[in-house]
Amino acid sequence: MTLLYITVPFVAVALAFLAIGKLSAGGWDALDYLVYAMATGVLWAVVVVCYLVWVVLRDGWQPSSFPAIAVLVLLAAVAAGWGYREYARDAGCRAAQAFFVGLPAMPAAERAAAIREGGAHVRSGSDCAIDGLRLALGRHVLDPEPSTPAQDAKRRAILEELLEAGLPPTHRVLYEFAASDADPVATRMLLRRRKLLAAGTGESWDLFPDDIVRTLITYSRTAPGDTPDPNAERYRATLAVFVDEGLADPGALPPWLRETLIALGLLAKGD
Image (cartoon, rainbow, N blue to C red; front, side):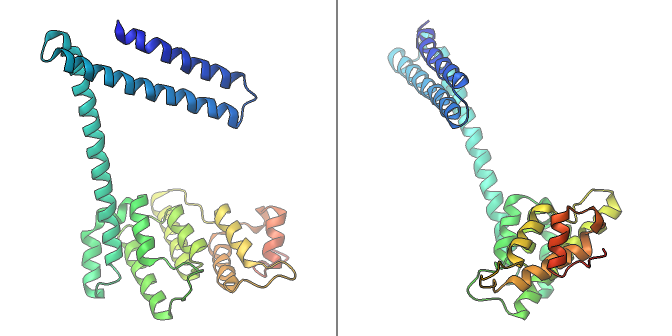
């Protein structure tokens, strides 16, 4: 009965916040009241747990405290399960990132075997794996010291080995190498891998992603009177790869996009 007395006021306050949010004009104000209602629920949970602990401390190992003990044990088990899952996920993330970060330091002869042994990391396509891939092979165009041709060749060779081993050319991987690195060679490699997978498995892979194309256009062109971006040629070359490899029907483009590509010299007027 005590739990009921504790719960009723919190439920009333939470419902009041939800009702005010519903009757407000909406937008951020309504979201604020939803947050208040959620905070009320959290506070209720804290108060209930404190009450159950107090009951156990008051009664000791008595039948009257068994329900409280059971609830606390259940909560402890849930918390332990959640903590273990988080630990396992973090450990998996660290392992995936360490795997990719270690690849460039390996001799080429050992790298192929390491990639085969790390197949689970390669084929997962998880955010953790891609974060590791970016740490190992990424080169942002804003880096103060541009990579040398030899470094670029090594990065691309490792990427090719990973793709051969089953690395999925996901949207994020493509975005990182195309929009973040402005690497036309790696971009072509990824688009051709998408084509190969589409032909072999029937999967639908977007070869002309709108968000990547828009990003490349933004950095490829310079407004009159502005200083050209020093990496504009890299962005334009990467955009040209999408036009060459991924644009099946130029006539189906929105007029503004078609005109922009023509202005950049990537499409002929008659296309």
